[in-house]
Amino acid sequence: MYADSLNWEKVFRADRYGKGEGSYVNCPLSKEEYQRFVRALLSAEKVPLRDFEEPRYFEGCLPIEVMAERGEETLRYGPMKPVGLVDPRTGREPYAVVQLRPENREGTLYNLVGFQTKLKYSEQERVFRMIPGLERAEFARYGSIHRNSFVCAPRVLRPTLQLRREPRVFLAGQITGVEGYVESTAMGLLAGINAARLLRGLKPVVPPPETAHGALIRYLMEADPRHFQPMNINWGLFPPLDLLPRERKRLPKRERYRLMAERALARLSGWLSEIGEL
Ligand SMILES: Cc1cc2nc3c(=O)[nH]c(=O)nc-3n(C[C@H](O)[C@H](O)[C@H](O)COP(=O)(O)OP(=O)(O)OC[C@H]3O[C@@H](n4cnc5c(N)ncnc54)[C@H](O)[C@@H]3O)c2cc1C
Image 1 (tube, protein in one colour):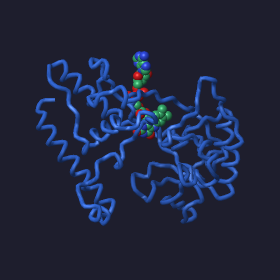
Image 2 (tube, rainbow, N blue to C red; image 1 turned 90 degrees about the vertical axis):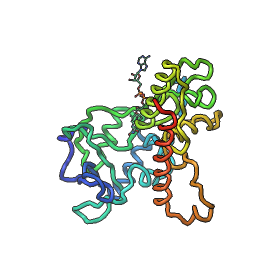
Image 3 (cartoon, rainbow, N blue to C red; image 1 turned 45 degrees about the vertical axis):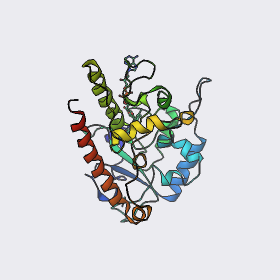
Image 4 (spheres, rainbow, N blue to C red; image 1 turned 135 degrees about the horizontal axis):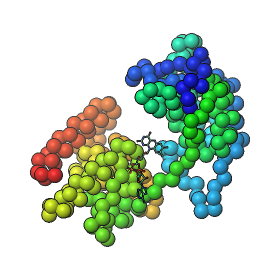
């Protein structure tokens, strides 16, 4: 949306728990406003599916109207979560919040955070203008659902990102079955390194599973091919720390993750010196 079409009297700048540079803009909703908004989402017109389309959504990126269908409170525990966002006008956290994030450096455009949607364009205008602060919002671009194409990595890929059946072909990015900017870039880097190594007569390499790159590769290789879905990087993909279960339980999560990150860096530099030239 265009920044100059927002009602700056109603919205407030804040990052969750005051962390960050205050670049998010928040639209506060009361209980009544939230409930009215959820009802409008449920009854709004959606773009009909074509007969070759099957609605299989990525759980980390669900359309808001699909979340609303799961229950009245779902959005309030998802993208409309108000925790850590205090409205300076009331000194309290609102009942729910819609967050806007600058789209460009000049701050002339904002997007609605976590608002993937399949609502018809006219309905997006009608329903999103019910959000306090967006009553007269002008839309620079409407939301639309995108398709993510990916191969069934556990069936067709080698851990070096070469196709099993045609090792001269490397896959890079989200087509390998990872999801996200950093993850796609990571797979691009590995595919690039291995393609260059192959050309120079060197053996393609696979990073150790204790590193983030290696953890993603291991997921691509070991996930169940019958239900394979794209994956973001997360701590659950890393092998557990080499500790007794009793010790591991006693360790606070933050400390556990710090140790895993240290282990990842140590394994990464060990691996880099082992393989020598990239
Ligand atoms: C709306 C939306 C929001 C997202 N939000 C986030 C987010 O907040 N954080 C995050 O980490 N990730 C997010 N993602 C996911 C992220 O964008 C992707 O995972 C990532 O960009 C994938 O990178 P890639 O280089 O593998 O593929 P892409 O970025 O899709 O690049 C593929 C390129 O190939 C080109 N191409 C396709 N076919 C051909 C052809 N036949 N010939 C030549 N070129 C071709 C395409 O035009 C495109 O430029 C979002 C994705 C979408 C769609």
